[in-house]
Amino acid sequence: MDYLWAFLVGGTICLIGQLLIDLTKLSPARILVSFVVAGVFLSAIGWYGALVEFAGAGATVPLTGFGYLLAEGVKKAVQTDGLIGALTGGFTAASCGLATVMILGLLVSLLFKRGDRVS
Amino acid sequence: MQITKKDYAELTKKRSPNTKLPKTLTKAFLIGGAICVIGQGFLNLYTRLGFDKIDAGALTSVSLMFIAAVLTGFRIYDKIARHAGAGSIVPITGFANSVVSPALEFKTEGYILGVGAKMFVIAGPVILYGITASVIYGVILYVFGR
Image 1 (cartoon, rainbow over the protein chains, first blue to last red):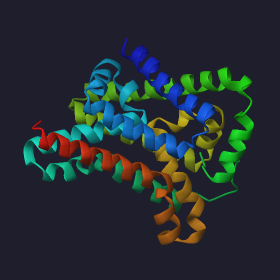
Image 2 (cartoon, one colour; image 1 turned 180 degrees about the vertical axis):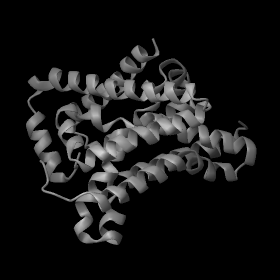
Image 3 (cartoon, one colour; image 1 turned 60 degrees about the vertical axis):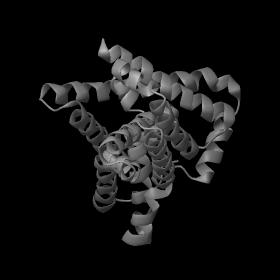
Image 4 (spheres, one colour; image 1 turned 30 degrees about the horizontal axis):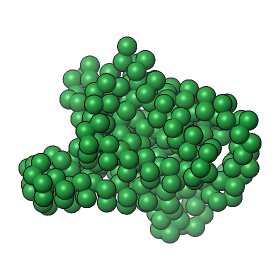
């Protein structure tokens, strides 16, 4: 059952992104930025947390889930450390993902040939 | 997916007739959903192995990003992205692709200003505005007490 909800909710979030691309001509970069900021906002008002409980990876795998991660990190850090937590919480929560993606970018550029661009 | 202005212009040209809308939406839904199902598989696996919720989630992201990075290196992710559109851009795999793809592409400009700088061409704004939003949220939480 969790697979079904992950599929439906994750698919729907991507469909919203595609609608934005097709109808508003927003560039993919703008879509990604909007989705992360929307994720932070929806988490702040408590909606996204409920969606994560319900849809699991269907809510955490799309980039809105990255916003959720940032918001949760900040919430926890402010509770334990006060105002300084507002500055540390986001990066602390995102550190695993950000370190991973940077290392992967470097490794792939070291190990793979640039090749001709497929366009 | 290699996202440059030129590519984007091509993409919009290709997609501009809205008669194609149902097709692009269906593809985005199916492929995006499928990526989330794979994520759910990893999440269930790591949970079963005894990791707590936060670690299992982090490991799921690491696994998905690793797969996306390898597929980007072999130029397979770009091919999927041409069909999937937002279905491959919006999931965390698309974020990984947006870092790895320019890193590889700009290798010729060296490891500092090529790989090192260009890998953030899309991730940079995402991190900037994501962190900004989270700091604003944190300040609001602090001021209004939890």
